[in-house]
Image 1 (cartoon, rainbow, N blue to C red):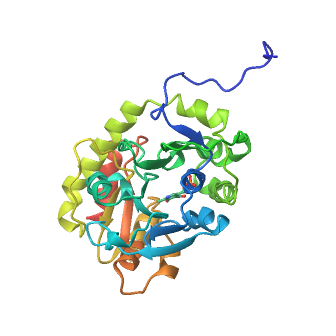
Image 2 (image 1 turned 90 degrees about the vertical axis):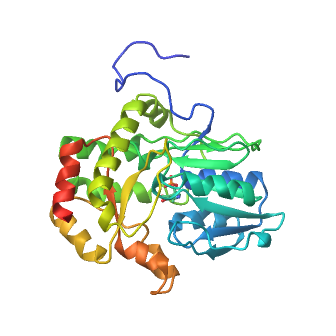
Length: 315
Ligand SMILES: Cc1ncc(COP(=O)(O)O)c(C=O)c1O
């Protein structure tokens, strides 16, 4: 029976999710597992330059896998004739700036999965299995969207997220540093979970976001940083017209020192991805990206003045 009256729940504006036609799941890695199972793939080609949680479903399903390198334009260095009927090739839309690479790949690679964890706004291409992870772009602890033409017949349990909100609430009430341990703990709690349906709480929050406004701010912030930092950026990229990046990726020779300086100025910079140091050779491009690429924040929390602060630390 429906519960009526009594105490209130959290109140949020009610709008629409960005990916309304997607399958809603608990995490990106579980969306990846869903595709691997639905398509009965037996071997996976993964980029060296990705997050190690992508191995969770591969190991759980006991699949074979191999890594491939990327070049300085984030394109795979790979012989696509290697892909057999039950093999699949995974490509990451890095930082949300690789829509062009995704389009080209979709034409030349037969069994393809697009990992749009870093490209929430990039629409899926027709017929291409594509997944998203909401927490990289918005204040939710979990949640993923999946587009695929093959649905699993199972009835998955629904996830509950309410115990994983402490860092989100604590950052808002106190500050980020005090709740960093809580963030790590809640991140860890997503490990080795079964495929679940997205929690009602996460979905409800994702219905309350002003996606157009977040998009506008992200695009403007990206352009502000790009105008000032383009000359020092070793990355050469062309942003597609509608792209909405996750961060501004700045690659410089002394990235490690600059990262320390940014952090001293309380500009928190992630490392994508520490596991790559273990997977590749010191002389590889992936090692350089992991060590020296600065993913600068451009998200909807910040306006131009904050971008200028970031620029002033770097120049
Ligand atoms: C590139 C990439 N793909 C997939 C994932 C997995 O997403 P989730 O944490 O929602 O499982 C992550 C990060 O965790 C990621 O960085």
